[in-house]
Image (cartoon, rainbow, N blue to C red; front, side, top):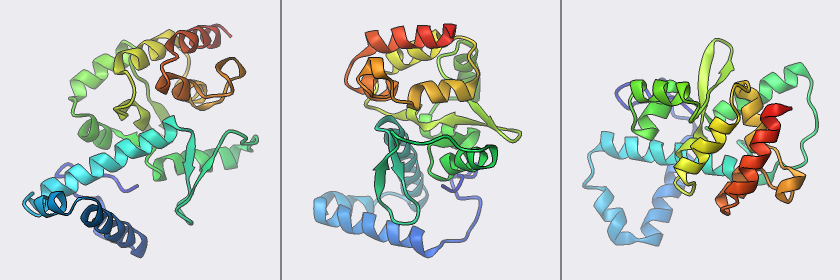
Length: 209
């Protein structure tokens, strides 16, 4: 997923055929689903409409993480990731970059734009462990699932704090890996169905391991 520049535009002016096809499909869906609302979109300034659309894309990418879905960039389908095998170091690094491409991990600029919080507030949340980041190369990236409206944000923050000083990538693994004690669901899936009590217990055990 292309990064948003500070003015809301993409870093690259290039528009590939797939991106244009997705925009076309979104426009068709909007007109078919609610023609009146679709017409109202035409009244929104171009820059603002683009900003809102990109923010929604980032939040949906976070939802796909919460639901444990993998978005294929080639076929456009989604498949379960519950039975992933172990990967070598190069494959693991490639998989991490794929999380950026899928919008599941967001650059600082994008995360701030989509969350609506300031960099100062983000720093306070990180210090309090209410959320976390992971490192790829020399850059920090932030999980898009923190943007998902379907979560109780306070509960999600509580689970993040429960993990304590665990490294960012281990926290990512905790949230996105199915666990037997959670009915073979990921902690994110369990939180979506309201099972905070067991997720917090699992997080405490994970932090102590």
